[in-house]
Image 1 (spheres, one colour):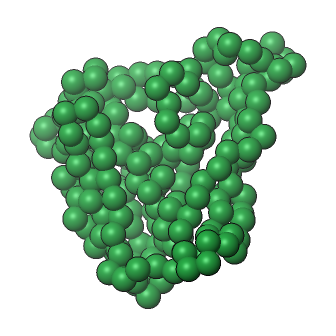
Image 2 (tube, helix red, strand yellow; image 1 turned 45 degrees about the vertical axis):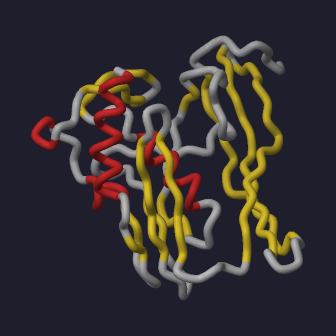
Length: 203
């Protein structure tokens, strides 16, 4: 499945790499990637669906959506549509981003979309190395602010015999010139059933 995921990510990344988002335009993951089919070269990979881990053609490209969403949060682009998984399938070993900071996509009605409400033009670059999926968003001019994502109120807990996890994702907007935080906003409140045994669980 891991080898197939690399194949799937490579195909999907090529559909997005280099795309420009001009002022007023909306980026849509599925509009660019399209349906994942065998005819396009996609293979079976891991998918998360309705609380279960399954296999399906194109499985694994959610990882690309996760990266794109995380990058967009660090720009002035406006998130128009974003969905998250209703469960947490794996423990944190190897996790580098806060729980619940990804994006779920499912063709063709569960999409990731963000809009350029600025006067800047943006370009998305995404690529795979021999070990990682990487990406960057460029702008045609230097933006006035930088953005920092922080996690708060993280906890595991039990309810009705099931284990759950929760947290909050906040974004700080920092003036690049002064270094001062000019805005702090709550982006997400996550709550999901845990499908593994956490090391600790607050009751």
